[in-house]
Image 1 (cartoon, helix red, strand yellow):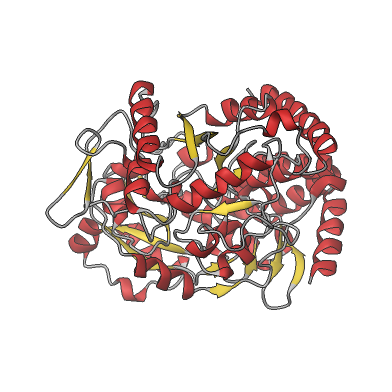
Image 2: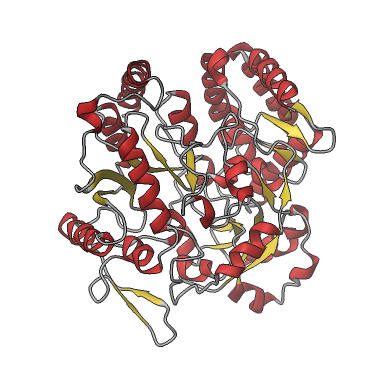
Amino acid sequence: MKKLNKIVAVVLAAVMSVSLLACGGNKGASDKDAAVSSGDKVTINVYRRCFNLAEPDQAQVKKVEDAINAYIADKINVQIKLNDIGSDYEDKANLALANKEIDLLWTASWESTIGTKDLYAANAVYDITDLLPGSALYTSMDAKQWDASKYGGKNYFIPVYKDNVEGYNFMFRQDLVDQHNWDLTKVKKLQDLEPMLADAKADGLKYPFLTQKTAMFYRWYIDKYDFFTGDATSNFVAVDRATNEVVDTVLTADYEEFCTLMCKWAEEGYVSEDEVTKTTTDQTTQTQDWAISWWTDVPNNDEADGRYKQDVTMVPSSKRYLHTDSMLGSCYCIAATTTPEKAKACIDFMGLLYTDTKLADMYTFGIEGEDYTYDADGLVVPSSEKYNHSMWESASATVVTAPAESPYTAQMYIDFNNGADVSCANGFHFDKANVEAQYTACQKVFEEYGFGLENGGYASADVKSVIAAYQAALDEAGYQDVLAEFTKQYNEWK
């Protein structure tokens, strides 16, 4: 599959390059391509990923598509063709892009092969800068959101207005807090968890500290560093917030401190080897096999109770920061091969989606009475195994009706986002074109050394020597070229 993705990416880049040459960027499409009379509906092909169901029911997706088109018929001159795709979204969307079958698609800064960085680097996204002013879409959120989501000073992506800042929490099973009378007010840093982890181990829990098979230096040290790559597999470079300079994080005292702690915890039995071997699953958090884990801070952290099927409690582990990757943690874009008329239709559809609650609910939850209902408080109760999405990957939190199991208000999201610090590297994007081979090689080195270091995979006494070996392997892979390019670009940007 990785080989297929690589081939598709090459094809995609070639297709997009030819397309842009032929169209002069976004303009100048042929009369044939653009020919839709004013009386006809402009049909746009929409691709989105489904996270809540392994595979959406395509018959139900068609019913949702028909319902949406009936509802918007007298509002905008647009109709949609809805493609709702499950676990193989990346591959199907990439192929559809290469075949020029997509107009509007969902993506994210953290996605693989179809992510914002991949699409931008392949010239596969439409420049919507001039289409936004005066549109319902543009006024659906404040200008700060659009400014923070720019690439190279231009707008290519349409952020979903949700928790568009980044911060993290320690997450505790509330039943264990009650059982052991843990004083969570004393938890300020990782080391403060040790007495609680000891209790969890004594209880016989398999995962006293559950990392969810994730490299965690990126998250636990976000107050000190802006990891502007937005990728845990390349957290070997960051901006030091105190100096506003690019640094090699592997050689910092913070990295040695963190890795040593994780390895000590593994020796104590607090971190399982299952994290290193990646044999925990996404459902492990729904069991009673763990005590403490992590959670990305959101306006209503109580939604974790529903996701993990038990009462959990959060304690902040960091501040919250606004930066480009957090803004684009869920977003849409228009394919570069789309005609100007269809691009305008995409903007019109998204403007209605982001301002009309009935449309937003339909697009998110499906058909009322079949896929969901409203309770006495007007909150959504999903009930379908055929069509089911969440607000965060659908439409603005200011218009999607909250689900009853995790209610929220639009003001909660507005206050949450406005209460964040603006990161020093907000708006910066690293163009790895000049060092792409070295960058990719360094990511492979991270998988060999860094992931294990950050998940307790080595003897604590060996951490310093393993870090030295890690750095040497990075250098052999071309890390110094990557670091120099990062530093050059960031210094020019700031």
